[in-house]
Length: 77
Image (cartoon, rainbow, N blue to C red; front, side):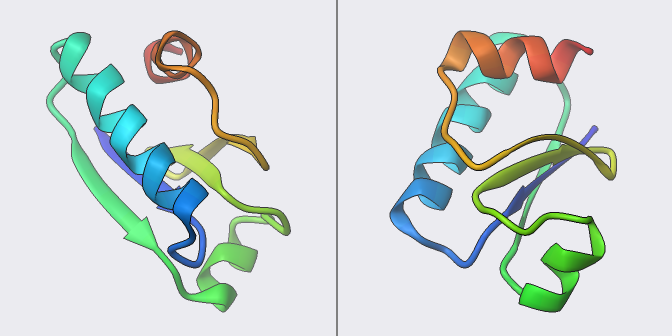
């Protein structure tokens, strides 16, 4: 599974990366975490508000930092 954090590297982006790693680890998933900070690359996902989370190239949510439990639901779907 490829998990992508889309954002410029702001504190919310870092928090999202941390919580997502926690959620994926608790679920026992095999994953690769990639942080995408390039604005043009972020826009290519159709994302105009950050932070955002994509799983295997599919954007799951945009614009906030969800809880670990919410992240688990995004990672399982």
